[in-house]
Amino acid sequence: MAKKFDFNQGLVDLEKIVKTMESGDLSLENSLDYFSKGVTLTKQCQSALNEAEQKISMLTEQDNYTNEKPLKDL
Image 1 (cartoon, rainbow, N blue to C red):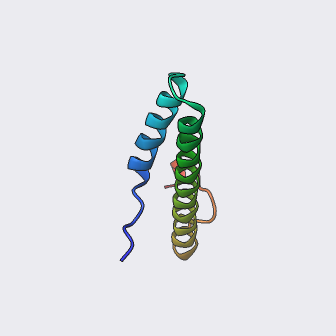
Image 2 (spheres, rainbow, N blue to C red):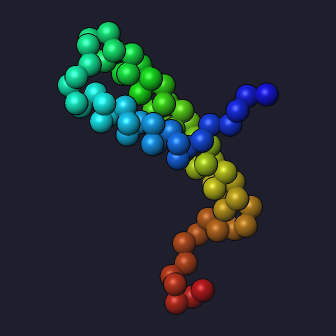
């Protein structure tokens, strides 16, 4: 079974990649490798965010939360 993507760990890993690349101490080959890993992580994070947005949308539609209400009316 495939391991579920951990969004928070993905962000931590992306931050490490950015810091490493910003250091300027990498060869071109290593920079490309880190860049490739960063692109993959970015896509995984975006996919996780899209999935969460879809779940929230489905839940709010089911519970009739589609119309905004002022706080004083709650």
